[in-house]
Image 1: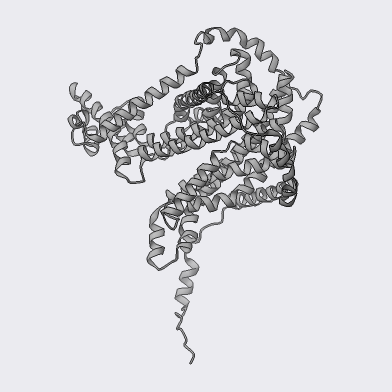
Image 2: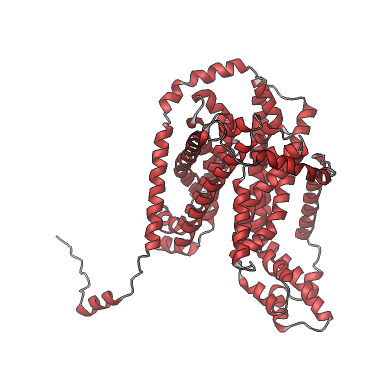
Length: 588
């Protein structure tokens, strides 16, 4: 017996109505962006073929690693007191540099955000300042500051601080552009100044995102501090570089193990702090963090205006929507939650003070280093390619870009899988999510330069070791960003598909991924941007690319070549940044 299903008859009226229905126009710019994306994927595949990663060859070369570790023998460590001091010094300079970058990023982000900038010229200048800071490798900045301030922690603090401004200011500006304009406009309508708009209408909304950004950047800076030791910055990185240069591999690998454990612990601590301060989306703790700032700041403003008899109704209504009364905002009871917040605040202040103290900064150097600037600047200008010539240098830059593209492509699929399993709204259960999150933390805890050194022992010098090291590190970074983005999508479409009986995979493919695709594109370009700069650094230890020439130039005091290499990297990063901004705008 055959069962037939009656289909609705298409009448001429319905056909005419369908023809007249508005159709979404095909944007030529969108087509161009799609073709550009396809071209980048094709170039990345070609770059991966050029790297020629061969698992059978790596397995066959495992004998090199066995002979190396046999020659190394047992791991050794510095004396306990010295090791404790090195750990404290490393943490202190990383924390101080990150906080310096966070403070300097606030005005740059304010000028770079489209809804707060005084004008397009200010916005373009602030965005360029961020890209410039992001493009300057921290190892080059440290090299310059070592010439000005000599060896120690201060060159590392300044290098980390200036380099981190690029990414922190970008994330700060993006958070400002996504705020609810209502509170800020209400304060402006009440006659508030720009400072009052910022502290009362903007800061309470962006503070949770800013805290997460600073903590995330601090984790990255801890891993990046390892390479700064190769140019004279004090800490664990410097001791590790001395050990490897003196062929004391047992001590070098022992310090590398300490750095790995330190990075994993810092990742876990940062995750706990973010969860405690920010909570889940819509969690009571998140609302408390936001409304506490708003209650206090706006309530204080209304009280001040009431004293002079000029409180505007709009200002009072805004305050009433955020707090019951100004007195309530200013005289909140000492609940257990408030006591914990105050204690946590003072603990944070104590940690910052201890971090600055342990760095033993000679503040008098800031009064004397100005006289050294002309002499140092002359050494870095004009840029030159030296004896290598432009052909060799541009080929090395092409290798660096190829390593970055191949590593980004290799990291994309594993990152998508791990990041999806680590997302609360995608994972099948808490156990799956916890395992994926723990794997991402462990991967992010491995500094790329240490992994590159181990891979070079197995595979030898060249592009292969640098590509694999960047790909592994990229999985940890991109996987975390994807997990966070998937958790932030609108749950409405997901619930709608679940209500129709869709499976978890169908909900993931039909609602989660389409909503997170724009963020996925942005994060992939961010990883490519990061890999280009990281590939330069890995070349210092033999990972291929332009980093080899950068190391030779710095060790030979050929600072004009250092400038030429930095300018090439700057142009490359500017091109990637321009493509990324265009993609985000087109696919919005």
